[in-house]
Image: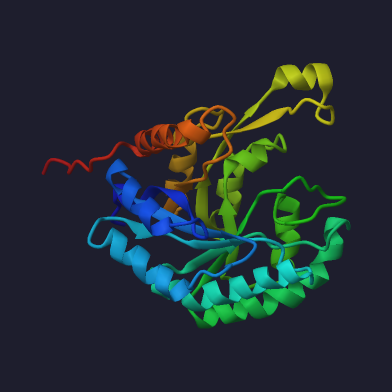
Amino acid sequence: MKRSLKDIRIGTMIKANAVDPVSYVKQILPLGFESIQPFFWQTLANVDVVRLAGELREAIDDKDILISAVAMFGNPLETAAIDQQTLLGWEKLIDNAHLFGTDIVSGFTGRVRGKPLVESLPRFKEIWGPLAMRAEDKGVRIAFENCAMDGNWATGDWNIAHNPDAWELMFNEVPAANLGLEWEPCHQLAYLIDPLPQIRKWADRIFHVHGKDATIRWDVIKEHGIFGKHPFVQMRTPGFGETDWSRVISELRLAGFKGAIDIEGWHDPVYRDELEMTGQLRALNHLKECRGGTNFIANPV
């Protein structure tokens, strides 16, 4: 099997319903990102998806940069007006993913609010069964992010795909091969779960990876526990957290993963605001180094 360094690209996420996402992309192109993931928060708002796709692809032009995935983050399982907008956004992105040059649409599963996780499964099947078929007809894969959004097994608001036990239940409810995960180690560390064995077990369901890390504050846990007023975990930009990204990327390669690790910024308590892109560029270079560097060196013959 022929292998390439860029079987795994290192990129970043783009706020698609920001004021001018195309201008943002043009400004960061010289920094060395190899992929971008435009994402929407709860609604497409007034964004013309077809126009945005064309403008983004024109912006990256002939540069060696891919649009790895498009995303809609919200709760498509509930029925409030904003949730219905989220569901419509999923449908529109599934129908138009090809215009972005990608076959992955990602986001949260949604959740029946305030109920135990298992009580969301019938609604999950009702919504995601047809969406999976719609996506399959378009050649699209759906990747669920593994963020708890402050939920847990007993209650929550946004997402049920935050725990490996939930993944078993979800993929049993809708056993479609084009349903998978937008995986990142950060959220598993926040559960005190070792993320590395998950890659080996769930590799065939990992469609996209987010570059986000975490620091477990064991001193806080020992003094205050995990349910006290002091946060016991910090979301970090890769290169500033605890994840061994060399091992993560090695496990992904051994499992045959091909795709992108797109940095999810805006969470780091230190490298944010004026230091946001400083932190992202550090993460970009760190992840490239963990991948094996930036240049492919042919073997002597």
